[in-house]
Every structure is written in C-alpha cells, then in structure tokens.
Length: 530
Image (cartoon, rainbow, N blue to C red; front, side):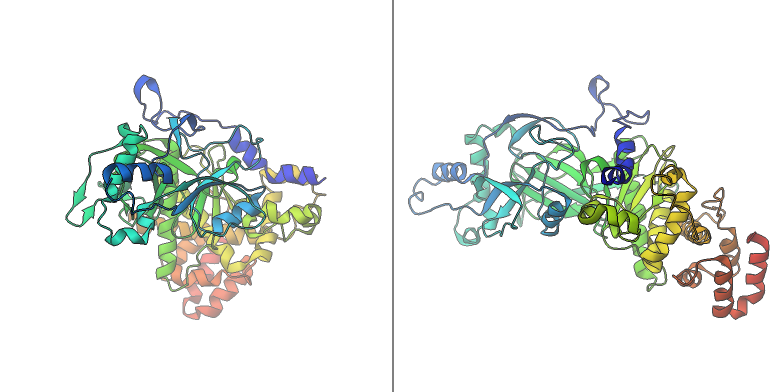
C-alpha cells in the first residue's frame, strides 16, 4: 500500500517525463538544424587538468616569479568536493548551507551542453553526485557521504594576496597555459580599478507591455571555469554583475531560484530549481534577449519568473493587504497539463493534513514533502508572454491565498477540488475520501484568484477590459463588478481569510466591513452568485 501511495504522489513526475525534449516550432535552430539550447543530459568528454589546483598554481607561480619561489608557499584555500546525498532530506541540508552545487564534474570537457547530468554509476531515481567548492574550514555535515577530489588555490580567498605585490591574474593565466588549457583564455580586460568582473543583462520581450526588452528579474545567474564559480542575481532591469574576475571563457547558466524565495523545478530531477544552460561566453560577461521565438522552456521559465517577482513586489508594497505566498514556494512546469494545481504539498497539505496518507507514509512523510512541489503549472497551448504571465500570476495569487487561510482550510478545499477533477481516478484507491465539504471553498478560492489575477493583469498591461478566468466555472465578475464601483483589491483581499468558506459568509463580511457599499454589494451578489 505504501508503494501505491508513493506512485500517486509522483504521478505528475511521470507525466512530465513522458513529454521528452520536444522541438517546438518556435525554437530557434543552430547549425544542421540543431537546437541552440538542449534540455537533455550534459555529455562529458575527457577529464582536464585543473589550473586552480594547488600543484598547478604553484608551478605557474614558480614559472613567473622564480626569485620568490623559495619564499612563497601556496596553501589550499578551498576543497573541490562531491557529495552523494542519500535522500531529499540530506539534499535539503546541503542546500540550506548555501553551497553552490552542480550535478556534473567541473574538470571535464563539455561535449554537449544540457540542463542536467546523472552519473552512470548512480542508479536512476537516486540523487546523483553533487559537485561543489568549499572553503578549507568548511564543516562537513554528519551523515552525508562526500569525497575530497582536489585541493585548490583561489587567490581572492587568500588574505595574504592583498599586499604581496604578485599579479595573481597573470599567475592564473600562466596556469591555464601550463595545463594545456590555453585555448580557453580570453584577452585580459581591465578597467582603472582593476580586472573586470563578468556582467550583462538577461532580458525578455513583453510586446504587449513595451517595445523594448524588459529585465528577467531576480533570477540567479551562475558561471564557472573549472572550480572557480560565481553567482549573482539580476536586478529589475535584468542586470547582473559577478563578484570576481576571470581569465578564460566561462560557462553561463540560469538557475530558476528567484531572490524573492520561489523556485521553478524539473520534477524528475528531485531538485528545487531547474537550470537552463546559456553556453560558453567571454569572461567579460554574457547578455541574452529572449522572445517567444527563443527556446520555449527557457522563455516560459523567464516569464513565470517575472510574474512571480512582480507579484511579490506588489505584496511588499501593499502593506500586507495582498498576501504573499509562503517561503520556499516550489513550482513544477508541466507542458502536458492545461490547468494548474496549487496542491501545496511541499508545505504539508495532504502529506500532513490527510491522516490516511500520513499514517501510511509514516517516516517517509518528510521525504515526500521535500520531494513534492507546491504547484503544478499547466502550460499546454501557452506560447506568448502575456499568456504565460497570466498563468504565472494566477498560481502566485492562489499561493498567497493559501498563506492567508492556512493548511487546514486548504486541505478541505483541496479534497473537494481533487474529487471533482482529473484526480477523481484515485478516489477509490484512497478509500473514497475525496470530495466532501470543501466545494464552497473551491468557489471562494477560485473567485478570489481569478479576480486578483484580473486586477494585476490589468495594472501590468493597462487593459481595462481583460477578464482572467472568464471561462472558468468560478469567473470573477462578481468581484470585478465591485472593483469597478470602488471596492478595490486592497479592500477586498483581506476579507478572504480562513473564516470565509462560502459565499454567504463572504457577503456578510463585506456588508460588515463596508456598510457604505451595501447597495452595490447586494446588487453584485444578486447578479452573479447563482
């Protein structure tokens, strides 16, 4: 029975895996009709000598400064390591330590770029080796398997280099030459203040909003050459700047974990944030402008990223009248689904609120919770910025409603909603428990979500006629009617708390809070609550 429940929990992962890597017609093509971006596995070539190893940096130093070789001694500043977490709990522990981890080795030639890698010696379905660079004083967490692969020297991590008179950038370049990696070097770029750090813009076209590109906001940009890794977040204009300089071409990638605290993941990789490779670019930086003809997956992720960033900004500015989603919101993008499902499993709904499931899983509850997302975002038929932006706004709006009403309220709503949707198939497997008293709550949640999405969509695009969810069973016209007559979002949103489980309670609360709008409120419910 426990296996059966686990299969039910991971059904969306199977749906996602069945989609494969589809080359949609708006993907731009490279030479020989190959996609410019691959979302398949990274293909590794041969192992390369690491120019940042203590041994190789020592040889480069002695070659450039032979008279100082006897007086200088290079000691490791960092360890190149790999971890093998046995489950999602251990993976979460590593992530909480703030370690920048990659799922592939850093000292191998990349024959084909991709978004992920799985070590062939690690069984499928298990977490693969995670590669990282940690300081020499790093305290390795107990119980998590790891291997020290190499002792490294990164001069910017050595306080002694600040006044030693050594040009460590030249030492670094010399190490690339001595290790046979000279082809990776780029011409040295310096400013009046010293070496130039990688910088650039990650931008995207939102044609219904502006003729100019807009920034991909708050997304993580990572780059590396061998074990020298850097990361930064974009600002609202899409601008980023790394905190260290380089001598060689770099591999750049986007990691869809936003600075606001939400992430978009790939379900079958068991990681909270998906990665999109940007390829190899110079040490001075990499700039990208995406549009609806760009790589589909990358484009959609960036749009949803912006919808989330904008929503969090609105919540911050609303003085808590508009509720923000919970921390560490996790989203899975599913191209095969038309509708979206805010199940909130990562935040404990069903796994901890549904006793039969919790009892069966037992000690596996925490593992299942860590592995599950909060939102399954359906993207079927979604190809333009404004379409994806609307769907993104909707899931963040509903996640905000979850924050306000709590897990128990959401549990009641969810069981009823699942009982009347595609998940009805599993009602018999779970003893016929789906369905029940949450039907009115489904109406409340979707009414609020569609209304809030409509208002925010109109504010973004300046479109006063847009109705988001007009074809939904729970269309937002009732609240839109009130909005257009003076009861705006900042006044209505606080009413949708845990006390409001049905339309009658909502009406009474409106009349209690805003008696001056009594005539308008009664008219709205007469027109639309049927």
